[in-house]
Length: 156
Image (cartoon, rainbow, N blue to C red; front, side, top):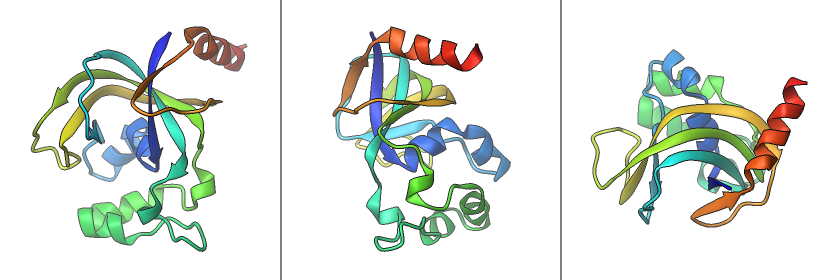
């Protein structure tokens, strides 16, 4: 079994595409905020939940809103918005979409992605081809062979 964490889009996309944020002159999203602190450290798969962060998408059209990115990051936020998928249906959901190393849990941080009360510190995040899988709350176990079989299928 491997550990997995479900997150609402577009946050998994941002975590799993650090190169896009760096290209926009922004820091990689290496912190995932939670109300709880896990004791686990190690390999962590990133799951995109079935819901999106509703405050970031127009409720009628499903289009990604630009105001948040521009307000938070200014011109770099405009560049990030331009680089992101524009519609909620463009983001994989209800799927494992990436992996990272969970290296620490922070109670405070100057990192601009930290809002707390706990920040799960992630390193070496990368996207993988989406693997359909139902999510759960908190950290949950996924059969390692599911990941291995899916990745093996991609490269054969």
